[in-house]
Length: 475
Ligand code: DTR
Ligand code: ZN
Ligand code: ZN
Image (cartoon, rainbow, N blue to C red; front, top):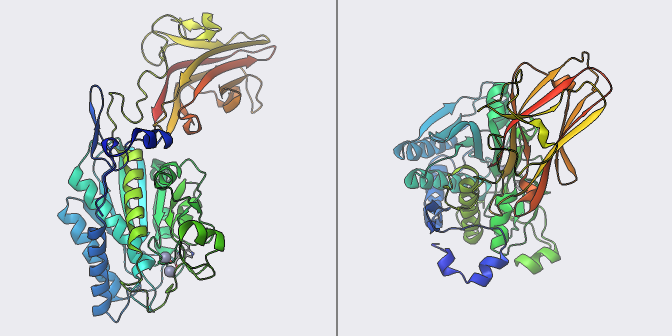
């Protein structure tokens, strides 16, 4: 369904009541001095066309798309062909350990733009059970993801972060394809993945609106989109640990995703807010032969597909610098300490050009501590995190130089937002140069908060905490 609720198509009162949700499903929003791209509407008819192809593939292959059969390999070939035609480099990854014997490959596609050190992943399992064609489980997630990948390629917006898509093999036999993928990555490659979003059963005919880890920072854009539609989403308790997001969770990668539910029954409270039949399963055809093209909730499928696009744009697309959705330029004043001391307050005598302690960039820094006697030095400034930043972080460069030795913390450095401690470091973290560190500020979107950096030393032996290039950034 083509739905556009650009700012112009929405009453101002409604925009304001939605609080912090910026520019949903509009093609672009023109601000005072620039045009920033906003998430597109993903055409649900095109998502359904992919489902038709997957259904036909099952029909030609004994009625299923089980990971070990030709129905799965043909599904891989279909998705791969569409992605390649759109300009993706696509990798088939054979699952060489932990998968069912004879299982086909994972399919991985990365859009080749944006910071390769910040990868946002979106995945769905492409295999089904042997009982039927697997249209809701999981043609729905596979097709919604494919159309999102094609939409991204077609729009080709300026990218801030890297987007990687995955279609997993052998989920139904134990999350095996995704487990193999995450296990096979080096720890460096794993650390580049900042979030994984999973889509398994997003079109259940008697479904609900479920989000994995709904209160997490990774889930914020997924939730913001469904909240903007008034859907009152709930935690995906039924699916916890039961789909491919679990493989990423086990390595500490933040995960979220959408689901509409499997065999668990809808409660009367859920039927009251979402419609449908209380006391019946969310998907009456779960793992059955009747999981066909008629077992698809088109409205739910559309809402999931559009929310994926919204999340992808929020997390990975460049939003421009002219007062866009999450413009972090200038949020921290004089973050490099190059122009006097204002707007920093507190121990501003620590700010300057310091012989013997080089700056990270420029000539000046804030040298906190290094006295070798009982002392506390602190600098603060009050910032406003833009409301459009569903993901925001505090970044700073810190060089810790110490005369202390051993593994006991004598001299400490803390980073606070208001009364909340975001980070604690000490002489134990000392090293030869500057290290860039960051802390999550997403919880402060739309709020004004005082950032404070404090060095506290004990009675002897100096530890210097040299701070430079403080900024708030999106993502
Ligand atoms: N991974 C699903 C199993 C599953 C069970 N409950 C839920 C809830 C929401 C999504 C998925 C699931 C399967 O593939 O069968
Ligand atoms: Zn599934
Ligand atoms: Zn299943």
